Image 1 (tube, rainbow, N blue to C red):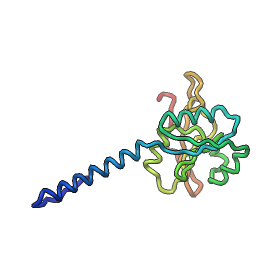
Image 2 (cartoon, rainbow, N blue to C red; image 1 turned 90 degrees about the vertical axis):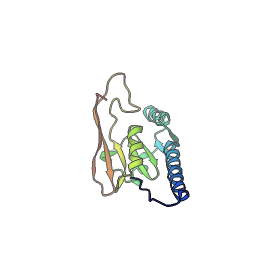
Image 3 (tube, one colour; image 1 turned 90 degrees about the horizontal axis):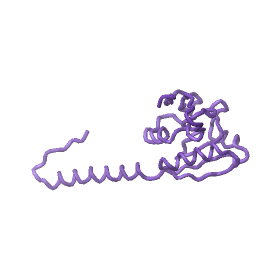
Image 4 (cartoon, helix red, strand yellow; image 1 turned 180 degrees about the horizontal axis):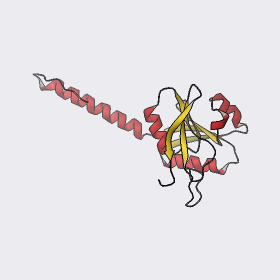
Length: 161
């Protein structure tokens, strides 16, 4: 909530309003700018390429690194085996494991939940970004990965979306 102090002069009020407007413009520009993501994937994986295309269409700028041994990357970022998938994205130190939808990633990056290391969609659910198969769509959970090794459902993605 914006509070404005009354002043006998109009000049300080104008400077305050201009400052608030300038902050809003700077915030708006930073939100709409492309978010850089580093994606580690197997060089022969087509669904990983499709996920990267999905991200790029949603405003991410991807740098793809083909890696023969992804388990080293996943271990480095603290992703437990039961939460792993076929690729790992990294933005601002946060990990995005598997076929996480871009809109959910963007919301996570705005919220930056305390104690989180990132999000995961374990496995390869049909209908998730990069795993499209016509009208088929599995329900799946996007998990919040926490620094203490625990998880919770960050968002449920249903087939009726």
